[in-house]
Amino acid sequence: MGDITATQEIAAGYATEGAALELGTVVVDGAVDPTARVRIPFATLNRHGLVAGATGTGKTKTLQGLAEQLSAAGVPVLLADVKGDLSGLARAGEPNSKIESRAADTGDDWAPTAFPAEFLSLGGGSSAVPIRATITQFGPILLSKVLDLNDTQESTLGLIFHWADQRGLPLLDIKDLRAVIAHLTSDEGKADLKGLGGVSPATAGVILRALVNLEARGGEEFFGEPEFSPADLLRQVDGRGVVTLLELADQQADPRLFSTFLMWLLAELFEELPEAGDLDKPKLVFFFDEAHLLFNDASKAFLERIEQTVKLIRSKGVGVFFCTQLPTDVPNAVLSQLGARIQHALRAFTPEDQAALAKTVKTYPTTKNYELDEALTSLGTGEAIITVLSERGAPTPVAGARMRAPRSLMAAIGTDAVTAEAKSSPLYAKYGETIDRESAYEKLTARIAEAPADVPPPPAPQPEPRAEREEPGFLEKAFDSPVVRSFLRSAASSLGREITRGMFGTRRRR
Image (cartoon, rainbow, N blue to C red; front, side, top):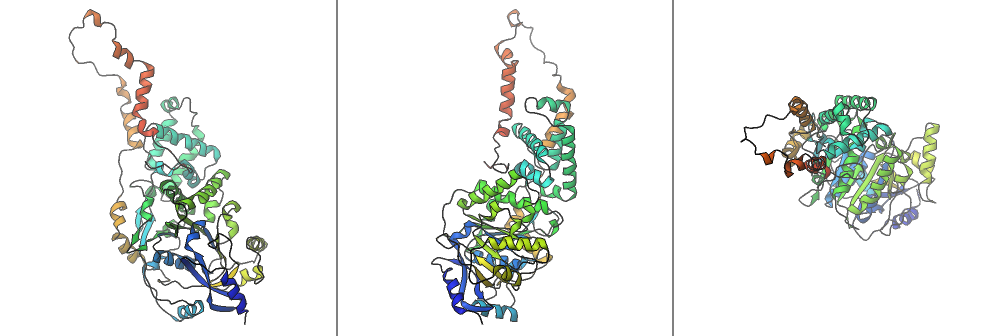
């Protein structure tokens, strides 16, 4: 048997006076004490966190359990359901011997419970509520990440957005962006860009080919209107927070798109939410699944923006949990911002695995109760090594923990059930049908069609002019002035100039 005194000593570091998430019970040398609880204070959830571990070690069930308790406390949650197995949150769990055993180990008064869930998907072609972003709203920085552009190409894309913004040309979908690129590489477009730089045909070709590839991967369904409002994530039903499940099973083949889309949502929340200060519990907890996909091949500037967003969004009352297989998947600058660490079992079969294990051990506080390199490779399913922040903001002792079992169904509910839930949602009426209003494509197409008609129409019959009217009058001279014509063009495009962009180049809402 293990040292029960050690379990109580560790648990003392997790005592909390306020409301807290119950993670599980302390395990030392295989001994479990149901009274030695491991908790995360609600007030520290905006200090962010990490849930990591190898495939099959229980990460998904940990996410499910965290989402349940947050919902029960009235905190909305966003979860990316990459594999489609979190839809069970909408149904009550089914008791069995394993759940009963886990409830006894963790001192949990387990009862089957369903939670209010909303099912969303990127674009159409899915059983869930389709959500979209306009190209203008998404911005050049995140779009460059989706298109896998280099720094030069990203800079050119930024110029293209700037020109469209200034001209009041809405970039709603991919065909709008293609039309603007085609215009700016034409003779007329080159003149429009005089003084701003230019768009080389080679760079334009790279961007256009990347857009074609994005369309082939389903991007055409995602970009468009009606555009999604992040405020729809901050909802409650009967005092419980709505768990928004972003169904991504159809996007598994395009991880770059869905990981960047999650970052867009986070950036939108940062731009839209007011400062909140220290709260008793967060306004929203955002679980960023498959986080390594966001950081892979990311530029230094992109990583700096992520780091800054994670630092600053806590003041908006939003907690962010990154979910991945290895802590080393997350850059050190971001990892250092994550106050809660829930580490499921790691594998160490290769030299690279062993190096990652050694780095992971170094990120935990010193402990006399565990040999962490051994503990991390011998954890059972549903067990984790944990350290979080106390109410005082200090790291708690390292705890080996047996995690609580979710109370909702630990299985998918099926496509038909998801479709039924989505169709009954108030969001379906808002986002279910695509809108295709006049935008850059239509305006530029009309401009081309009207090009031969640039010659002004013949004047209407006028009385014979008097001699004193042979010279142009003041207004005629004024309207013929290049300065006034420039002013009128500027006034006509004032709407475009009012577009301002945030940290990630996303359009700030007015």
